[in-house]
Image 1 (cartoon, rainbow, N blue to C red):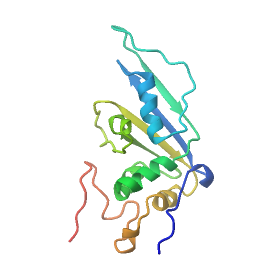
Image 2: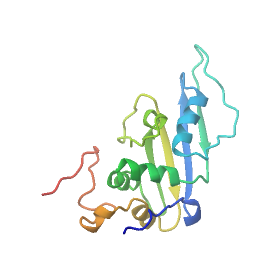
Image 3: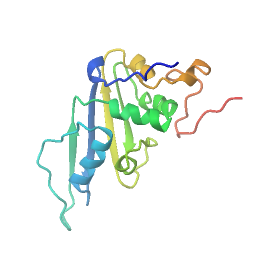
Amino acid sequence: MAGPILKLSGKDEGIAVTVESILSGADSPEKVADCITNIFPGFNNGSQLNHPELGNAYQQIIRDENLSINEFLMLLHKQQILDTALDYMSRELSSNQTKFEILRQAAMTGKISFNIPGEKPLGGLITIRLEGKNLKDWIEAATWHKGRDSIPRSINDELAMDDSGEASTWI
């Protein structure tokens, strides 16, 4: 019988989690904050946000730090996209920090969809930054699944997707 799924939060493992999103044009601050809280329930921007006005475009950033990443990880398990997550979460990994983006439209429905680098999707992006010691090992542990017993995966291995987001295939 398999044991319970390992529940990582980032907070108790020395991983600092920062989440932000850029509001522009007609973005509703409340709707953007709501979609972020679907993925990061503890998200609290805490600042006064301006509401868009016709003919008065502006940009502002909503952001929170020291969040738990538990719900995000649980959604990755539920959607069964752990290998994709391994590749995207480590794409910009350097030393003890990384950054990646997910789509706000997917987050509105409680789903995770990673952004292809360089794309500017309709609906905007949520940027997630992770920082901490042994971050490479933590990402591999956070995205581990039983299938890796038969097909091992690690960051930047030969099975990683390419720069365009295309999956590597093997026979």
